[in-house]
Image (cartoon, rainbow, N blue to C red; front, side):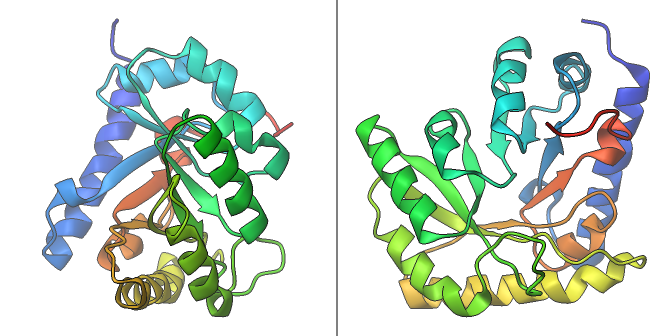
Length: 234
């Protein structure tokens, strides 16, 4: 497959930003995983970026993701990064390397049952609403320990870390307190649970440098890799 030059340039720019942020805080760039957010972009656009070497993609809508995953090149790794409704949980298990957005006990119980019934293990992160924004999903920080303890005890779920979508600021540095808070919550949970939680899913196109500086292991970048989205979500 020929490489889309514009896709190559966009990918190189994002990788360079990650590398520069890592250099500034003494991290190895390989410690940061780039999740290319392909929601509302078609399988051909995924294939163009995959031809440049990007292998990990993130989707937010089950009904959009599944046919796209079938049409995209084989061998890609998919993460689910959107709000997951309980009645669609059965479609997510086993298809995504990680579900980043587990945020309530009811969804956890559904995922546990569906995953167990399928004889699988599903990696998950807990989405935390660190700023208490009513329009965003996520467990409140004061409810996080209880949810984390419950999920950690579910044998079919592998709790691997935390995820946040911070408030939007004109200055990317404005998101840094949310990233710092998520890292602090993760560190406290590791002590409380007595287990490693290696994933910190935080940072997007506009603020990935601040996220990397605060310890992000997975940055979710869409616009700066694919350009503006052309159609609304269904």
